[in-house]
Length: 457
Image 1 (cartoon, rainbow, N blue to C red):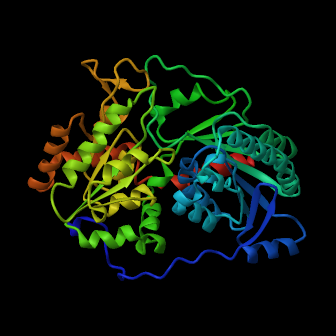
Image 2: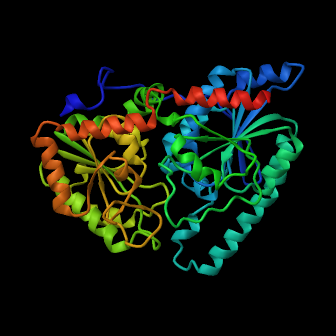
Image 3: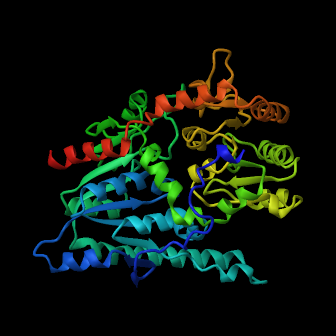
């Protein structure tokens, strides 16, 4: 199966990735990393401050994943601009080590990175550690962060901020003050990379405090849903999904940090490589017993034969305790929990299995056979229904993916693929994804064009 994976034309041993020189200083709980020192020095010697694009990430690593190709393309077409990124989320700051690809790629892209420093966890292992100590420490760090924002605001006060990239939720007081001080244009994108089709019974609420000048949607069919969740003054443009641009997928595949990774080395030693994208159980739509059934079924099916590698890509906000305990019964060399980007993992895999997740799009976009392995809870409005009233995902409704609810169904699909030499239905899924995601659209350039229109308006 090796010939169906990523092109391995590069040498086996890749040099260790080099990151830009960094000058760091700390303000309260924030670390400021000046990454592009040469450009910064030239800007300081200029008569006027360069225009600044500020990327503000306040909740999840998926925001970084979605914005990176747009920021890359914007920097490429506007080299005179300075790009500053802020990681303002406690969860993100505490999981930097778990997301090394996204963190390092962000550092490679921007000129300055401002981030919360992770909370110390040394007291976690103390024998007499009590809940009240945790609460006091947590309150202390939150207070430090609140006070630190004043210093960050002062740090940015002299910058010529013209553009803000952000999510489309409500703005906090920090963003509202920045927007009031600078003549900024605000760009927003959807949460995550999924398909956003209006679902019956869904409740939509516009953010109470949010300035959004341009909202970048993926497809025109999603615009009616977004009109209900963004301010009425917002311009909505369907540009496609930048992270599925061919140049970006190729960029990810050629990165030294990927080519030198342990995952990349392991694929040469195994006959078959499976990718399993998981997400933790949820009280609202995903019971814990269903989660356990799915994990155990995938492990049992995929690792039944020797010389098989199971790569596990967990959701960034997922607790890994159950997965680690379940997988402990298998040879440690036969499975691996990975932090690489999902399209990188899909490219080095022969077959992809996903719980309900936008990883489905990542996998099919790079041409890999993909199965949605999930059991839906009836009566929940988070999903869609087919003609028979059965709960399904948008990926299923659009014919983008094969589906399975039970272990035997998943096993049949896997056997069908490997025994029938890649049947036509897998190619049909890829074609439907290609058409819907507009894979040949160069969405990142389309996004930059729409941003430029907003800047001059």
